Structure formats: C-alpha cells, structure tokens
Amino acid sequence: MQKTRFDELVDFPCHFTFKVMGVASDSLPDQVVEVLQEHAPGDYSPSVKPSSKGNYHSISVAVRVESQQHIEILYRSLSDIEDVRYVL
Image 1: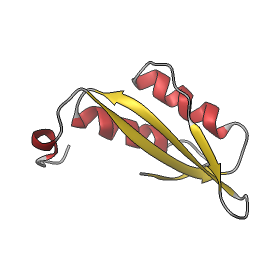
Image 2 (image 1 turned 60 degrees about the vertical axis):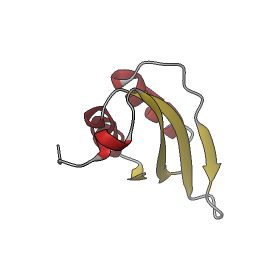
Image 3 (image 1 turned 90 degrees about the vertical axis):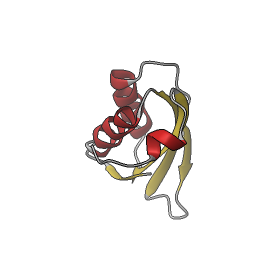
C-alpha cells in the first residue's frame, strides 16, 4: 500500500463510488456485484449506462469501505474481472 494522505482526508468508514467500465454484456453487472459481495457484503443496486455505440457499459455502484486498504483491494479485485477495462 502506498503512503498517502488519503486516510487523513477521508473519514472511514464511508461510502465510496466505484465506476467500472467494461465490455457490454448482460453478466457484467452481476460479476461486479459478486466481487463486491466477496469483499464488502451489502445490498447493491448498480447503475448501468451503455456507451454511445453500445460496445461498453459503465457500471457505478456505491460501496461502504472501511479503509484505504479496503478501497485498494476492491480496485484490484474489480480489475481482475475479465471483461473489465477500467476501474475509477
């Protein structure tokens, strides 16, 4: 984990919105929620927005995170989904 002032600037626990962009598929939102459930169990209702040509989906979901390390774990795990191209 990198040393940053992030922990000083954010009061944990808090809700953090992740935006996951990946290849358009009906299963992508379910895959994202599955990963989130593994690391941060909760009731998630992701927002899905298709790209202008419909080739990609942008999935936004707010997650309760406990620490900077928790955020980094979620970023890595979401990035490991095969169809995911970016996690913001």
